[in-house]
Image 1 (cartoon, rainbow, N blue to C red):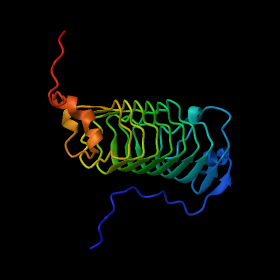
Image 2 (cartoon, rainbow, N blue to C red; image 1 turned 60 degrees about the vertical axis):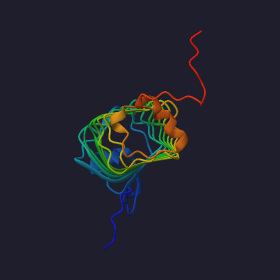
Image 3 (tube, helix red, strand yellow; image 1 turned 180 degrees about the horizontal axis):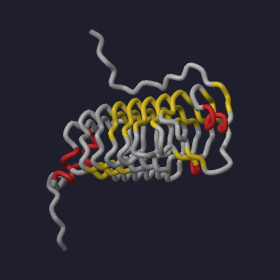
Image 4 (cartoon, rainbow, N blue to C red; image 1 turned 30 degrees about the horizontal axis):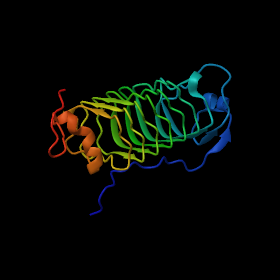
Length: 220
């Protein structure tokens, strides 16, 4: 019997025809490649936004509040301090996007890929991750609190000063990541894979005092 892969699947987009943003708003975005910026504040109201590619777009004035996203690719897009609604996001791929301060609070992400994105200061509190990959991403000072994280992968990411609170890290592997200054509560640690050097970062959480043999306290 074949073993089902726990890694995320790529979005399924068979054909994407170059179309203006206005066409999508009027006729739907399915099977479209969108490269132009809407001129005014815009809300996408499709119940399910499916099979579309967005390139080089700043989403500062674009809202997905009423849409579930599936089979969507974002390339070189900007989501500065963007609040993603508490909705379902499936088979998404973010490529080289600036997502500084983005918030996915309470959202559900399944088969989602973040590649070469700036996710520093991002907030994933109370989100649910089902097969999510972060690859070569900047994630310093990002925040994970009470986040459900089955089958989540971090590969060659910078996780300096990132916080994990009340999060099960069982099955997560940090060996290729930079984790200097990472903050984590001790109950989140069981099952986490790290290098021997990285393990030293978690010693204070266990209440241990590490000294060289023969070293004494200097109270002078």
